[in-house]
Image 1 (tube, rainbow, N blue to C red):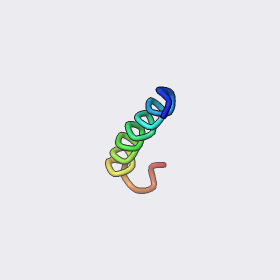
Image 2 (cartoon, rainbow, N blue to C red; image 1 turned 120 degrees about the horizontal axis):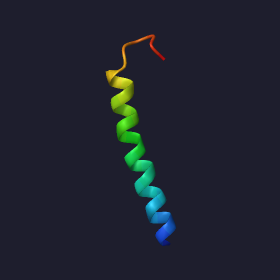
Image 3 (spheres, one colour; image 1 turned 180 degrees about the horizontal axis):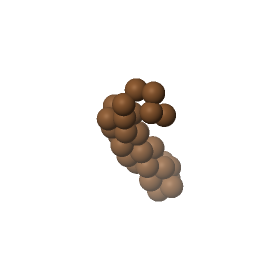
Length: 31
């Protein structure tokens, strides 16, 4: 696996966690 592929995988994992927190913390109907 290339370094780019690894960094891309890390980025996708890291972006999923905050996104999930935002969705959970956001009140329903706010989006």
